[in-house]
Length: 188
Image (cartoon, rainbow, N blue to C red; front, side, top):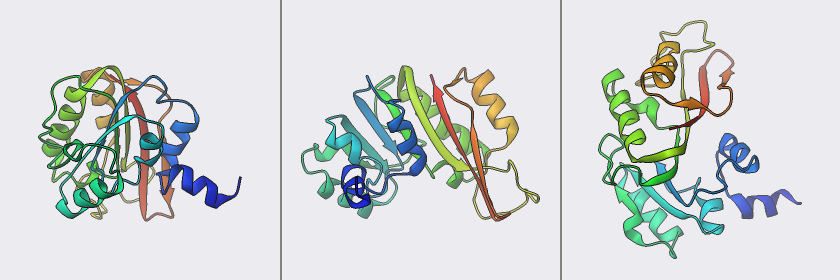
């Protein structure tokens, strides 16, 4: 397959999300939320494969763009709002994507408010895909490039206190001592 054909099939999807798609992680899921969807780059595969797609973002222009991009999806599936206050009912989604969003939480309290909301709207046995900045692997964890970075104790809280289950080992990528990003694939 030519790379252009692949791009037509999946778009400019997060490479770690593509990894999960290729592993069949979202088989059996119907309703998917992209929390912090931006212009919807991570929803293309799901829309083309007839998933019910939803998105929320703090940028109203991004929401207008995603509504125009996915014309066959009801406009009210894409909302201007915050991850701290998700408007959907409890256990509504089979899967949630939250890619490069949570590290913009203003502080630890805001981070956990976002996590609680994601868990609240995720159905039992639902898949939670998170990619965010972390302190893991950095020689100087005092870098302030992001408002909040996941620390090892946060991972412990996610698994033990919040009852989430790892679906595969966490991955952390360090970019030449500049930043560190982790990928977590969890189940409620």
